[in-house]
Image (tube, rainbow, N blue to C red; front, side, top):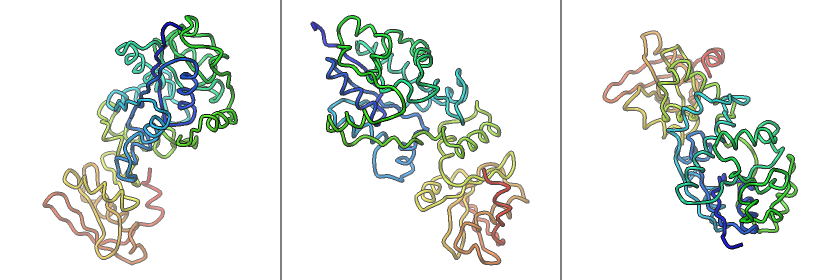
Length: 343
């Protein structure tokens, strides 16, 4: 081979994308990878909230370091939100626009390929691993929609798919690429042992909030009451924090579930009314929207219900916003009240 091909890969931090890098190197290519932060990634969200002392995209960085592949982290959250709100290919089971997401990331990878003079883009996708998005017709549709016809290589299933331009030109040895198909992972696990790969993220699912039923309900509620055109990245980020209660079309309450979330919600106290219980350990809560006179007691009772004094006949709740303070004593909310308002 007179020229060594260079590929730009999407590295999730999982096993398949890591193996794709290693297989391609064995097939004669140089590789470098991109990892995108969408604003809906559970790992990145936990890092930002403070739940884990680790950087965003930790798994991708760890895998990249272990296999010796450079990884560039790119925040696409501002550009990605419109994709989620108006997906061309529609949603999955919940609010997950998986095909649009794939196309969008591959378009970004194509731009990087063109800017750096690389020869192709690659992914860790396996034919048939996902029954809708990884059948041949879907893989082909994504390739065309991303503007990567003949330039998108899936090394783990390459010999089951039409050859790409770099294979046809002999820049990547097709015989060293793989023919994995289906949902089983026995072959991938054996390859990981052969390569000595140990630091990959386990395939447990749930890496994207948009596939989660509870989060999707909150997201739909935000679109309904704010309007998708008015949503910002910060608005959807906070949907992953705390318990959410919709008291009226104009009013929502968010109640922290633990100390980390309470500390995080505390940062919003200057822009919103915040609430906490006096005399007992309890959550931090923030109120988003306009509070009418009849709302105060209801809000206070919900906050009181999640305190250590929830068995008391009445609890004092303190509301603050900047220099403004309001004290209200109420009985803790009933289970029926919680169920009526909780998203």
